[in-house]
Length: 531
Image (tube, rainbow, N blue to C red; front, side, top):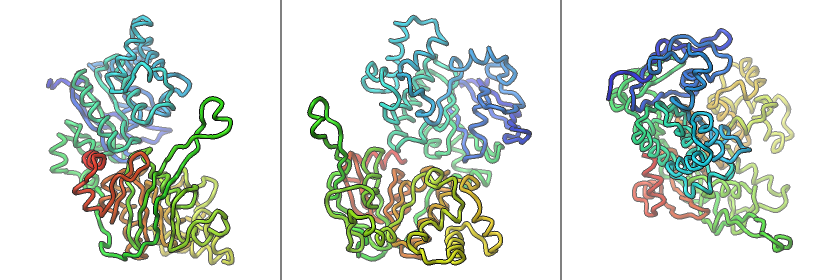
């Protein structure tokens, strides 16, 4: 590999309205090299990568970014526009927002070819099919006519990769290309990127906080914290001997198991033959008189024991979130499901006592917390339903106690009163998830349904939230129904596990047994993909 850099970044700084967020960073990428730019949200990694192509609005840029000797930051806009997509391409984090929902995906790829090449329409159509086939999309000619919403998450990400590779760029910037994908799809996309990188001979700058991905993909790693490069070097060397405290913290952020192993054998929630069916329209005249069925959960049976965690593992579309909604009494279901011997009723008023026993923490705290409500209103909302006789002062004291329980409070009541008047957007992602946990805990439930409670969080924040949940379980004897696709989270939290695929439970048992000696091929794939 040549030592002459393809890209050399010198003293890059990025400022917004006079505030500098990236502080004079330096790094280089050689031709054909795979480099990972690593850091948590807010570290400056994405804004640094976008700044190389001057894609950040209202940003003041300083320093140099030399690509084949040309300074990208000083290049006239028409020259840079010609270079984007042709010599340097980008894969964005969320394909559903990056792709045009009103255009077929094939037309969107052809649009790049029309702008950057001299191919005829017939040649472009053929090239689009070839690019989609190269990324492993089945039936590429048919998929080229599909719209983004008609494709799965993995297929949409493959379309983004096909679009980025349309002009065979020398450098690919991949911004969290697997964050929104399931664990096995992450592995597939990673293998695809490696294969395409090797066959095209391009360099790749991977922006990510997924250290498992970095370990398997990158030749070198660059670690950013608070707008500074704090460490860089060969991946194996940095993982083996991290020098900076921040790097050491990232590498040590893998979830740690800290639960009470022996507990009650008494089930708090018991389900037998749980089945959830969605109606689907039928074609033709038959659809006038009846509808078809889509079986989302096929006869699941399980127990959630008192003071223990049942993990439900599977990819998107496996039925695990539907199972959680049925367990919460939010979806009609067939079969039997009881909580402490009581079943959900068709009459909402009769479910009030059960609602107090079982609460939920959702995946994304930013969308599950009302932006128009204060912390006091959000956390105390359940008290208005389940303890309406409380005075304003009593309710306020309980809210403050709940915040302290989840690590969001101090002993100073005056400072706490100020916190109560803040809004969700004033908190970090990890703090918002703590607010969601406080809201669930304030009515003293026996069980929490945790629907991907850490998937939207950075690795160190994820570890903190899991430690909080483990602490609460030990202290309060809480039961958890944990929905996740993250094998590391299952390994750290669960006592027993269900593995779901296409609505069916394909394997279940004690967590050690299932993860150490998986019997079903699908379970083996999930465990292997987790690294």
